[in-house]
Image 1 (cartoon, one colour):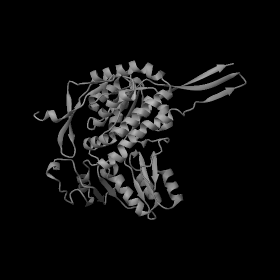
Image 2: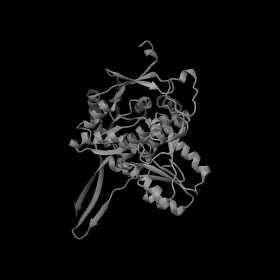
Image 3: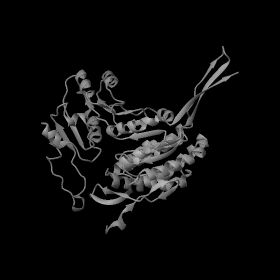
Length: 433
């Protein structure tokens, strides 16, 4: 290609070194539609090298004390924070989100992920019981599992990648991570900081590529005993099939169809701006044409309003925030996850009715409830089939508490205690005295 010199060319990070790949995937700038980056198209060979490096690094890293590992995680957090603006600019360009969102949410949360688990790893306790009648004391001990395979999605690239890397290495595991091939740049930038932070070679390995090649090779590798995956339910089903022969430990955070339930006594001054942010956060294609074909009415946005763009952005992946009304509950737009700036608005009459309709989808990741009636928000929150329910707020997270979905939205939970238990093996030891 004549303009190839201007492209950013990523390399895999294996055993503390950047390693070129024999083939590459084109990555596009979503604001212009132009190729701006080349991402390694890794497969079995690259994954094998990364797993070998991680396995070789495991004895030394797992033998370090929690305090030593904590200090290294804090140093890495400091380095990312120092380069926050560069990371934010790169995340915005690579993923397509606003620079403000990347600057105030994505990158600060990536920094906090390392700091949070650097602290939490110092404060876990184990269990101990005594059987005086037989002169025995029992206690539990936890140890890292080994090489963790981590697969993260395109929508929150560094945010969710570090949410997996931080607890895995804090617990003493080594990792092979595979970011989305569509949004790989900030993971590559993070790799440049690992040695300066004091992360030993081989502790964190990053292999870029598609799920079908690099992801599947990682899931199927016999020396990777646990997989943490965030992505689609369909991909998770294949991960379960491929990992079953090895009895791998799985943490699967999957899709969602998150209802926002607004009662007539809600504070609309808080509710409407927050619901708009939660509905229109990601700019990608949607199901608007499907909705119209099913008889729904588009109130504003796609197909109704025009979107004038500067010449340099006319090939970009832009879409107007869109509101769809008169949608049937069985419509694909009400039943399937739409990763786009689209919200479906439907009316309801009773509390019982809205709970039944909200629970009628196959997903159960999160929900929001808006009401000034304290008793109502407690009742509704208890009955919604969602792993997380926000009432009169959205996206307020305490990382100590579990995060994960019900039904087709996943298996397992992530958070301080849950991640610690996932990334460690427990052993019961009995001492007779």
